[in-house]
Amino acid sequence: MAKSRILIVDDEESPRESLRFILKDRYEIQAVTDGKSALEALRGETPFDLALLDMMMPGMNGLDTLQQIQKLAPGTPVIMVTAVTDAKHAVQAMKLGAADYLCKPFDVEEIRLVVDRTLKERALQREVVHLRGELTNTYKFENIIGSSSTMQHVYALIQRLLDADTSVLILGETGTGKELVARALHYNSPRKEGAFIPVHCAAIPSELLESELFGHEKGSFTGAMQRRIGMFEAASGGTLFLDEIGEMPLGTQGKLLRAIQEREIRRVGGGETISINVRLVCATNRNLELEVKKGTFREDLFYRINVVPIPLPPLRDRKDDIPTLVTHFTARFSKELNRAIPQFSEQAMELLVNYPWPGNVRELEHAIERLLVTCDDERISAENLPFVIAKAEATTASATAQMVATADRAQFGEALPMDVAEMENGTFDLTKVTDEIERKAIVEALRRSDGVITEAARTLNITRRMLRYKMDRLGIPAARGQKEEADGQPDGSSAPGESAAPNA
Image (cartoon, rainbow, N blue to C red; front, top):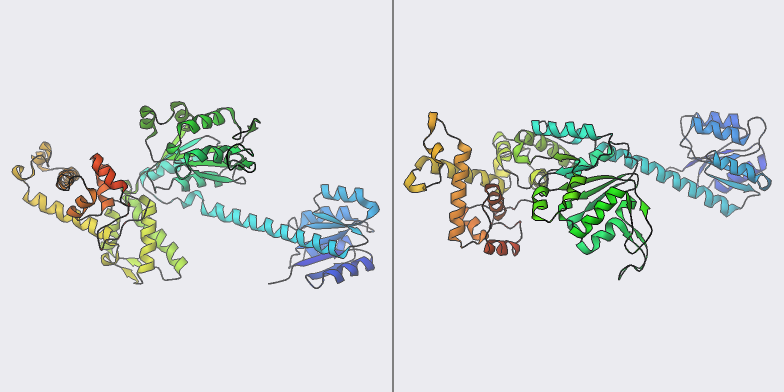
């Protein structure tokens, strides 16, 4: 690791050489005798990490040199070196931007401590700048992938909100990229220098959520051993992202409403009112209007957070974007795994496009990652895809073909809608036909399995998760017995030999 470079500026030889002697074992040292020479050194090809600058020099004094250094090399910290009698000048130098000051005669340990601390602070500042730049690049507006018409509407909304402090409600199923949109809003806004604080309301026990949001005072409840600031205070000057806000308890909803209206909070167990300065972005996969009607979500809070809604479409409704997303994730994971980027066969890509992706973009991302880890082929075919993806498409296609080919009223009863079955004008809606056939098959399978979803899924030769997804999409309610069985079974369970879709 290269040594840090330090520039020593002092017109007197004795202190100049003393500093060189003290620091030469740890750092690369260059010493000059006046301010003009210091500026010439700073214009060189190799930058300095720190400057030690004498206060009293003939010609260009220390304060003048400090100001010139800040213009020429603004990222270089400067430690002023002064006699004890020049303390007021040291204070003036600090006001002008000096990092610290040292007094003559020197204390060896103090010099090493101050120099080491200043260099560490500079390294941390550079790391923060670097990481902030990385975050900004990661969450650039352009990194939200998709060219479909529904995504174009999303882009237009985000673009209009970048310079606003308006509260935003992001709506969409699990895995559609709600947090990605929230981060893009933050890192492309005037608040990007502030913190982005995500709070996942569903992951925090209801009795702790209030303390998490607003903080608490020491002794306010059992286990509160010291004061703790909440997420509202931590996000001051930045953005607070409340994910899955539909899971928030009613009592906490009331306190959140007050915080939004009054722009102030109180810690749990505290009497002090604290002003807050945050932009609020919320997200949910629930229908909050329905939750308002059911009485599980406050109507006044809904109108407060729903200033500008951004609806994110499920992946099945923007199939045109799937090839682009597959290409993006394949390139990303190939780079991480240090392997050549594989190509997808036409059949494999068609299967990926036609799979309904109940876990949306997140499920697709995980599926591609798993595929690249488990498959070393340069060309990915349908046989390489996870079983659940290929099987879901094959089962649907073969079942539809067989049923449509042999369909009649006596066999399928009401499976085909009357207007579809009669094929008026010589055409019919294949999607409606498929939905009606699937609905009838699922209802029959549930009847035969006495409501046990796992057994019904095995009968239909699909995974349990796929069956749950189809039941939700087709509006088939789960009976009480089905719900109890579901609670006792992991969501990602699958029949032997099947690969369950990743958790959303």
